[in-house]
Length: 358
Picture 1 (spheres, rainbow, N blue to C red):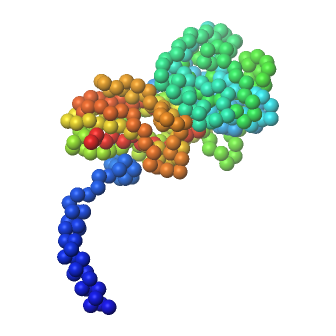
Picture 2 (cartoon, rainbow, N blue to C red):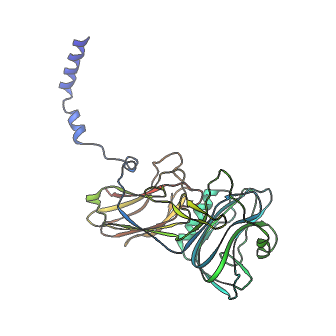
Picture 3 (spheres, rainbow, N blue to C red):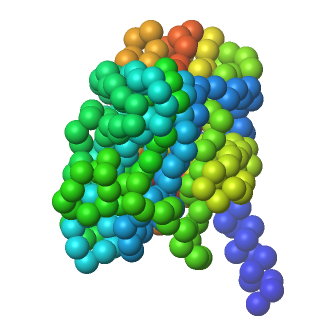
């Protein structure tokens, strides 16, 4: 048998002598999914900026009426809230500013996205990102001494049926100190009169404690050098993994304890990548931690748009790390700006991929 095997091997080698050489000399090009697992991290400098970020997402599931989070604000701030009504009756989740001072507080609402009551949590989280990124919707509010005003427009107070979610992200600025309170209250009644009757709800045991105040709401990522597609090849930028991109640390003023924002919800990333060289560059978003539903604002000299991530469905990335959304295709030599924020109900981390266009 051994002699016959050797004879057969010699015959096959004589018939197909060039196959191994051709395979070695002409490797198949890597697919996007192959690249995503092996890409080097692009070198970036990180800068924390912007006003205070106030995060209200614990308890995410509300089983009783009460204050969900509160803190004082003066100057610029961003509120991110994300709460589900798990009570058997219809309730309201409201964000309200109170003025305990002697002077009126002038409040400029600068930009926001707020969902309506929604049963699809992914769609709610995705929707407010699209609203927030598309346009600055501005309001001027005045909070008189001893009074309260609802965010974002002085009157928004939606009713949530059982199992519905309300989520939002609101940028505002106050010239005097005000207290920001997020609360779950009855369907009927004046929020300014009801909220002072309640105490702060404790976080739920065994659930993530995503509640607190953080010094800055923006993270600027700047390339340490221009990206050259011909020389640098495919590279990646990771968001929200807790290692390459650190989780924010802050303080829960209601409990008097440090907190960590695992997922960096409410944080707005502003990414600047100058490019050089020849050819074209493609920028993709790739979810790496599970199902993801959001938007990204993209700008170059020739591209200026807000892109759904994904663009043809509510969400992607479920049970796979091989989903991709093309954000931009542009000539080398232009600078790339990408602005995005982790959507509520979505999973992190995610990656931007810079890839030379074929």
